[in-house]
Image 1 (tube, rainbow, N blue to C red):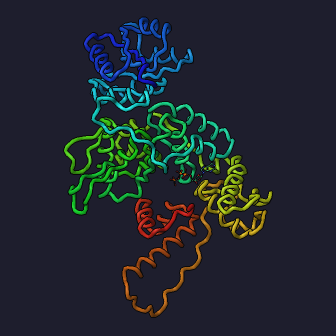
Image 2 (image 1 turned 120 degrees about the vertical axis):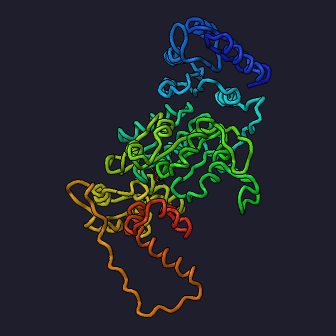
Image 3 (image 1 turned 60 degrees about the horizontal axis):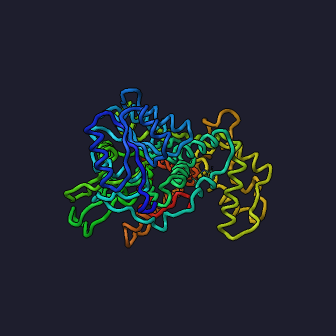
Length: 481
Ligand SMILES: Nc1ncnc2c1ncn2[C@@H]1O[C@H](COP(=O)(O)OP(=O)(O)OP(=O)(O)O)[C@@H](O)[C@H]1O
């Protein structure tokens, strides 16, 4: 956008004072502003000119802001929309996002937030805001657009539905909740949304909520100031600041403790965070995509997840079904994974699965989903050593197959535990020795449960959170790295 042609905005509100307030605020930002009082007047303006952005009150004398959004959508117009809704009417806000609004604001409108949302819709930084300027993307985060979508192999109806939803929601700010079992591709979906969104050149920050010790959550999410606590020797930004202008992916959101849920809700509502030890809040412009393998509404019923946060995050839900429910995707995903493995190893052409090996795999329940398939193929390729992966290379014992109902499948029979030696020599570094013992036990449990961390943890009496924490501490990979 050149300085000579400021973006043209249309403000629609029937209250003269509010209209003036919005107009003045936007004029100070250097925009070209027009206004209207009713749906009819706004529509007349929209028919005679193009605007970059429509900012409309929800309730208008002759209709609603949504009527305008729908008309724009029907006419195939490119104007983005921001809807201003009454305080506390969450349904209206959700309706607005579903009708294609870029974002919504609630009354009374906070002008700092107003400027930030408008700027974000126009891909700019607020001119008069003290908020941090949008940064150029960190190189690590800059993937060419569409990479995640291209990586997503498979043509099942379920996956096509996922792809189409990704395309639709990418344009807006609407929070998305991705639901699916572990390893189904939830993070891939979140990345695809980010890469197709207007934010794609800004950071994508992925956070595994289940892997962070509870005492560190606030500092990790919101950052801290030097001296905020012992050990805080310098200022550090949190995930929200790191994702400024981009997308924050909150994986395993269902694992977040209740106290942290309240703080997250506040940050999402206020669009501002206060680092530990700081006096002032910082406004943040971040789109939230969260994911869970849990049934969050059941968690809400059980009192383990805040209902208000659930509604905030779950404006649009994308369900990624388990691999066993879309086995038609198996050949394409396996081929894509084999290609990736071969590419990483510099081998060409990539190995292929024999027909029997594929048939064998399609009888397996894949409790760890695509991630498990990847691990399995990694091992199989190493064992095969040639260009064709056969059944025997897959290392799936008959015990893991059942013809009736995949759900009842049991993991392979455990190998007998090694008896403890009668006399263990005393270690000279007890902590390192115990770490090694723990590492071996975790690795064996993971191996036995085909890298399904939940199942491996449960077999040792550990929650997923504890399991992840221990794995991170001991530097054990999740099997996919
Ligand atoms: N449709 C697909 N095609 C190809 N690869 C896929 C597909 N879906 C997932 N993957 C790959 O499977 C692995 C697991 O995916 P991802 O990390 O997105 O799953 P997840 O559901 O977020 O897992 P978790 O719940 O354990 O965090 C990744 O390497 C991803 O690239």
